[in-house]
Image (cartoon, rainbow, N blue to C red; front, side, top):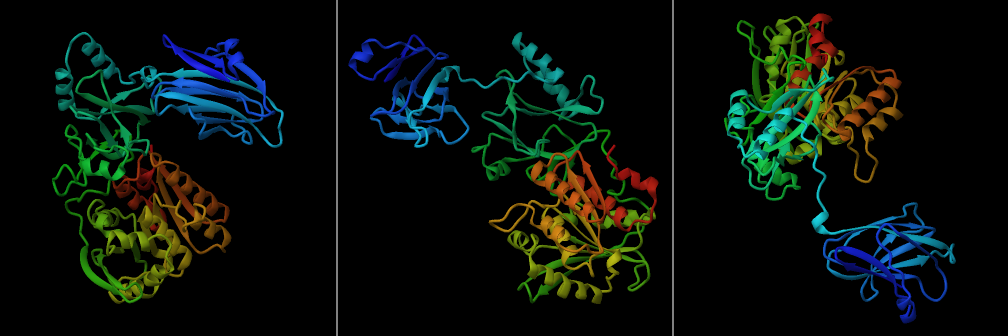
Length: 531
């Protein structure tokens, strides 16, 4: 056998096959290699003396397995399975003491020769994260001031005056900006909710100061909203992060802040090259439609919900050329997204025909999760209960001028209802649709496969996704786009430098309506295209 001995911070690997062998053993420093052959009465075994937290790394050559044992020879884990391709082993000593490594033969290779190399034993004191260089020139200057004994007071005064996040150009990258999010004075950690990566990124502390930061290279056309969460008790738990999120106190631009509560509102970043959103704000002198809230009970679903009915100025039931928007998630599309204002402005600009809207609420968050992912019973409710009821309210249009629309699960539901009921919904407007969804136990992308295996329906599509949403949204939207195009569907697909975000969707909704039922005013519609 071999024993790994620690002396003055070094390690030696010694043979321990028997007492005579021990006397003639050769030491093996990390980085050196030993070899041997399996077979015979016993398997080769080496013993390692490790401290708590030691990181052990090595390589095995040959078709053999390598097992980690405790000091009594009891198996702890299989480090290398000789039937697989991987021959690197890596483990952490959870406790100090002696461990054993045993090379084991495979049944198909009973006499295999092998090589074993101990590449590294790294103590806890040497285990440091690689420090990334500061990308921000402003933070590099601040770090130099701190190193010279200065403080951050002047820096924070500038940030209070200019606002955060910090936006800086990048040399030789005119289409990119460096975006640095900042927080002052956290004790343990800060997390960024809504980061350009799509993750809940951790901010880093600058040189032990009160400056926490995270920098990202983003397109110069970026639009996004975000929140910051200082001193999260359990930073890897999304729910706990959400419990601590709030708007950025140094960013005066907010979004979804109707309550005025910083814990509920989000901060907003819209870089100068971001595509304009010209229909979001109310305009003086523009005629406004009416919004009526009604309660609709469903016999099929056994529940009831609010439905908001928008009628544009001068709406006359049954008049030729009129259109209808059917939109999910009323909790958002009557607040964060001002749907009635969007429709008023689009109509005033002559971009769409007179268009009424049904904005459908969810009875509860649980019902949303059950109804909006493809659900045949919910599809029956839409076709057999909601749409006939809406027609009785004077809100109806032919399928070719009816748009079914939503975001996230709402985008998924819209595409499903177009597939199931094209005789009612001839236009699908999906914003960051959750096309990754599949029934439990099946591969992702169920609805895309349903489209691929079915006959082409009389449908038109507008699909939008954000570049910051990650593969689950971005890649599955692209996959659906490719399938629909291959099948000959009329489709417009756009991607914006944005996340899973109502701040972007409030601009994309009118763009989708122009694309699907618009009146061909190309010059204004170009405002929808990312620059």
